[in-house]
Length: 304
Image (cartoon, rainbow, N blue to C red; front, side, top):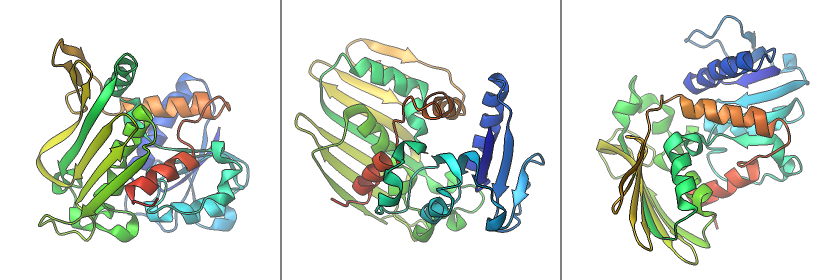
């Protein structure tokens, strides 16, 4: 497999290490390059061939990983759309919704990362909900940005809206998995802004209300929660279900604990990349195309 990375920060290197693991298990030869606009401070794996000029990028890659800052995704994809057969793009797809007409004819070649879908407890929830009727759901993702971006949160991309920062983009996972579970809403409302004393220019709060024909779903996202929370609470016709993504538990108010998992944090990324290789690269399935991801982004940034 001939691969090129655009961006080799922490998430890019995570995908690279997972790609090595999976390709070794499947006995797939791996040839990896990476385009860098400049020499970075951090050390990249020595087996990756570095490219510093666009005209040195070849035109026969099997996969291009776009893992650079969100605000660079569109220009990167425009430059390389004819240089790879498939594209694995880190979430969110863009910093705002764009026209994607130039990509839509080949939309199944673009897969946008959505790792929470592949978390073990989320897969358990999705299976469980097939036998339930949901009337309402509440979602919360609350964490303290200085603990999340530990080097200097004020200089992280999360703090800078021009780079694609802001809680509505950083935690677009929540909107994504809700839509994966329940489909797109008939209408939505969004509120976001900066309400805390964090030293950032981006939004630290985002609230969404999604309306479906048979239910409402509320979503709360923030950067300032001193007590980390990441869960979905679901009111069904005869029960109250909680899926906690931090404790990896699925519980029923009536039946008690339904499922408790022990899972390494990297497992969902391995699961997702395995899906990409087994399904997307074989033309079998693509559950998060560039079109789907752009439509989720329109809700995140309230474009109707």
